[in-house]
Image (cartoon, rainbow, N blue to C red):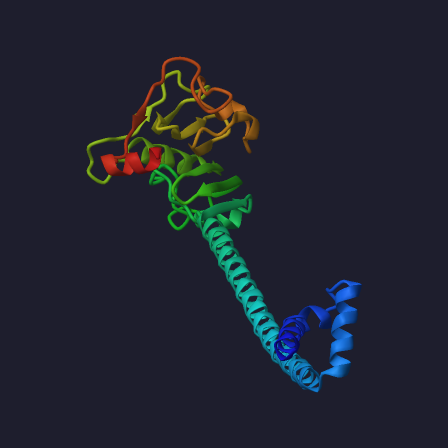
Length: 282
C-alpha cells in the first residue's frame, strides 16, 4: 500500500505542469484534485511548484522586458545611424552638386555690350586673335574720329569662347588715310607674318589678319566714299542669323553657320604654338 501511494504521488507530481496549464483530460484532472485533497505532502509540493513557477515566470518576464528595452534601444540607435548616414549622403551630394554648379558658373563667360564707352575693355577676352587690327582707343584722335557703332559679345566656357566684335568708325579724311596706312602695315610681334589685302574675299576693299583660320576671322573694311572703316573679329563659327551687324560686311564665302561654302581659305598672321591651337580646338 505504501508503494502504491508513493507511485500515485510520483504520478501526480509529474502532472503538476500539465494540471496547472489545464492540459490534462477531465479524468486525470479529477484524479489529481482528489489526490491533492488527501495528500498533504503533494499539496506542499504543488504549492512549492506554483511558487517556483511564478518566480520563474517573473524572472523570464524581467529578462524579456530587459531584452525588449535593449532591442528597442538598439533599434533607435540603428534608426539614428541610418538617418545620420542619409543626412551625410544628402549633404555630400548637395555639396558636390553645388560645387559642380559653382565651378561651371565660374567657368562660363557671357558678356555683351553695345556701349561705345566700353570699347577697348574687352571684358574676359581670351581669344586667339591679339586684335592688332582694332585701333587703340588711347591712340585715336577722338576729335577727328567718330565711333558710330560698337558690339562686343563673348560667351562660352573659359576653354572655348565665341566672339563677335564689331567696330564702325568714321574718320576725318586725314585720319582715315592714316588709319588705312596703319592697317596695311600691321605686323605680328615676330614680324614674320603681316596682314593681307582683300582681293574678292569681301564686298569692300580691306585687309585681314585672319581668314577662316580655326573658325576665326579678323579684318578691316574700307568704305571709301564715307571715309569709314569697319573692324570685325569673329571666333567660333558665329551663325550669320545671330549677327549683330549687317551681313554685307561678312566674307563673301561665309556660310550660314560660320563655315565657308566652298574650299576653306585659311590664313592667320598670328604665330600660334601647337599647344595653343590644340587647346583652342579642344
